[in-house]
Each structure stands twice: as C-alpha cells, then as structure tokens.
Length: 115
Image (cartoon, rainbow, N blue to C red):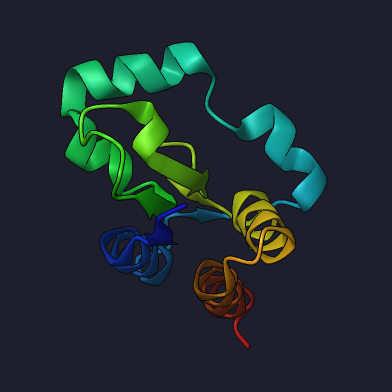
C-alpha cells in the first residue's frame, strides 16, 4: 500500500485551526458529523478533487487523482476541522501502522487543544 501523509491537507487543517474554523467536539460525535457520500459528491462537483483531497490526511499515490479512493483519513466537514474527526484519523492511522499520519493528526489535536 502506498498510503502516505497528505502534506497539503495538514497545512490546510493548520490554517483552519489557526483561523478558528474548528469544532471542539468529541470522537463519538464524528459519526454524525462526518460527510456522507452525497456530501462528498456535491463537494467534489463544486470544488474538484484537489480541494476534496485537502480534507484528508492520507493519500494513496497509486490511485487515480480523480477518485475518492485516493484519499483517506478525513478530519473535517468541508467547512471546519472537527476535533472528533482528527481523533478518529489519529486512532485509525495508528491502528493501521501509518505512523506519519497518526503523528500529524496528534499534532493537529494538540494545536486544537492548545497544548
């Protein structure tokens, strides 16, 4: 698997956090807040895959740029960073041995929490 850290997404998330575009929710809230497939499709239709990718901490360079399957570890709802989404991304990345993605998510979480 060629899953790697999406540095553009990390920079995007940091910018949003620093500008206050963050929801301080809990991990358990992410299930309800995560974009649905219909939300994702509408966002892609309006903004394209490059912008869609900025909302995902993982990227699989072996998959086509114009597919949702290229992107993984979402952290927001296409308008704000969701703390619950960052926690979920960190947890799933760590469970799947994507250490660079887990570390980036942890750093984002620390930024959100003011650590």
